[in-house]
Length: 170
Length: 201
Image 1 (cartoon, chains in turn yellow, purple):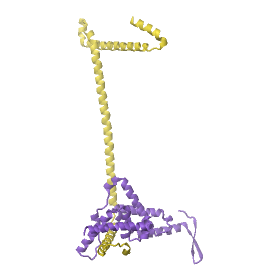
Image 2: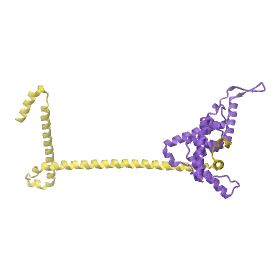
Image 3: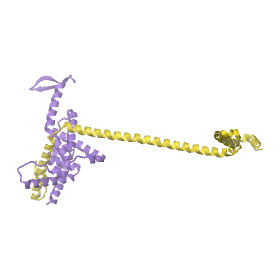
Image 4: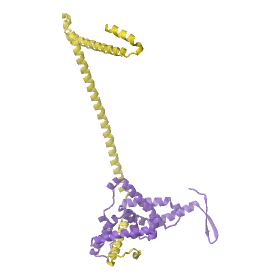
């Protein structure tokens, strides 16, 4: 290489040092490159490393899949539990409401014969009372709805609706 | 394999010689390419190793370089030397790598690049005293330090000049720069090396 071409106006000592440094650098690079180029390569080692990476990848993938499955299962179970609790609560509320409406009927006097079957009869009465209560509640609700609906009739039907309303209240 | 007759005829001493088949032409081209791989592969590897300081990566890019060269061998018209042509491919591959690396920043975590101290350890076993060896190692480390601070283009030009010992015209052809720009990059790179050497005196 023509070093003279690349010289600058630096001091000769500096230029000599630079030239030496560059020469050493090239020699070092040659030695490193030669050693790296001619290093022994074992295919088995590469294969082992590859399989190890692959196994690690698979394990991680399986772990993630299992984790997501467990998570999904837990979520479903949790929701089911919540739904059960809600249903239970609703049933309890319904039973409490039924009991409240059934209390006056359970106070009625009973005969001596019916005393023997007291618990079963009481239960039947309570349930009948609850049913009656629910039915009367439904009737009230329907009557209210009917009234509301009848009030919202078109203007042309207004007199008839008024008449019906008057009849209902009278 | 195609077996059709090639229109190429080899002329020797003014007489038409037997027509050459495509298969024969391909065989000759393959042999020529194999010769080029054998003679230039270590140099391309050395250039990539000095640019990247990563043995595995340098090997991979060397392979890729020759694969690309093989694919485009039929397009090589011989405007420049085969070495310059191969260097151009290697430089482009290296550029692509750095570009990708900048985008995919996580690659940095798994880089295999050796550090400068390790790279400076390599010196041929010459007939030198221990003191001389130490001095040489120190100088190599200083040059590596300067190279580390160079821009991608400056580094490429510097390595082509002082490791691969290419002429300025060859460097210009391989990098696609003008000779003037190559000179300017070299001057800046040398300035950095000088500053590094001066700094430790």
